[in-house]
Image 1 (cartoon, rainbow, N blue to C red):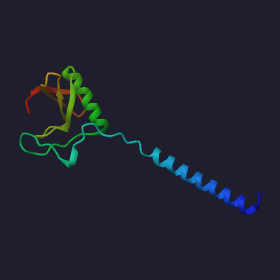
Image 2: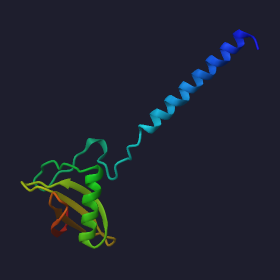
Image 3: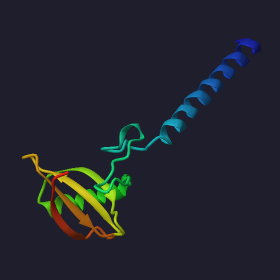
Image 4: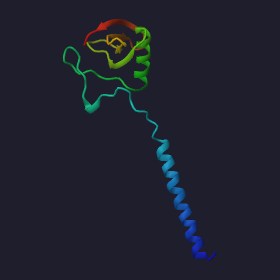
Length: 120
């Protein structure tokens, strides 16, 4: 093989390795899972007083949802928000198969404060 062809092939192989390696690094850094029940179009739900509710996402949402479903005895979580009206903790809305809802209030440690029927 002549020197010019050898240099061209080695350069092409090196460039290919850089491209493949860069792609792998970029994909490895993109591990964020999509958020379940994320609010679309930056629309923020309002509470009964017309105040905007602060939605909870990520691992905190998962922990609050698990505690609420256990407290409610089943169902599916439709919303997790930061407690309002001066309370700390979380408010979790759980929907049952029959279409009814309960709101589970949790403290900051995900312990149940109350479980109430929710009609809104």
